[in-house]
Image (cartoon, rainbow, N blue to C red):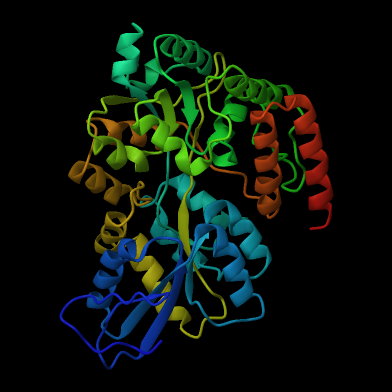
Length: 416
């Protein structure tokens, strides 16, 4: 794509990609591919080009489900573009294994005390930094005030010391259903590992990957069976919905059909903007007697090791993640918590949709957050477990489904 002529403001071009105008004499054009909408990238790219008028950034938005295939297709044979791309943190190990990410360890010193440690850990392999953390994540317990009051259920506390157990949540959800709620408990990413990892970890089952070998699965244990039996029973009892895709689960809460919804903070604008919906926020649940665990991890931005503009690409991703101006502008375009700790405070003080939610997320990121396992077999891990979760959701015996998933993973990982 040819550079655009200089204009007085950022110009968007929707021809399969988005170009941000720099100066007409820009010497370097960086190609950037990611799953975010072009509008999300506008603030940070505009700020970067203002600070670096000799560099122009052209952004191409692609569907999330296609992102990894597109990156591998373009880079696997030594392709020089894109120069920068969005790296899903649990897949960084696989991208490194394929030689698709430049080593950014020279930038690591600048992250100490600036980034959430979990975000740095999720962007590193064997102590080497391979992508710059951009955002992080957590999960919240949303509850419908009207449905709980109708059932005489006390409203949950936002205090992490008073968080609900999964067992108590199921009981309260059933009580709300008895008084008119269509569903008692709905999980946001209803059949995905990110959403369900805290159940297995809280039940003492571990991440599903052996702590001694990142290519040895560990799904057949008492903790995983306890967690998956609970998950099975949510749907078998009718507390949660069968047949509803991930994309529609937030609707069930926004429409007033669900008593409790376990979902990300990115749904806060949706919920606060829904007329007639009275809701509150509480900490993520845990199993009675188990560890308190919440999921985390989100996006990092990586650099193509074959880029012809390696230095400029590193300058851009560093600006977006660690620079106070750049990281705040990056956060403005994203409805998820920034990985930069200083920017996190500004982000939530400027736009806290629910009073206290920033403090709650801060607590979870500091005390309870757990990243997904950094195995180079994560792609197979996620796919096989996704099918197992869906089978269990639809009535399969949890023990049998876990044994089958364990065998499938062993075969798949033996080829890596």
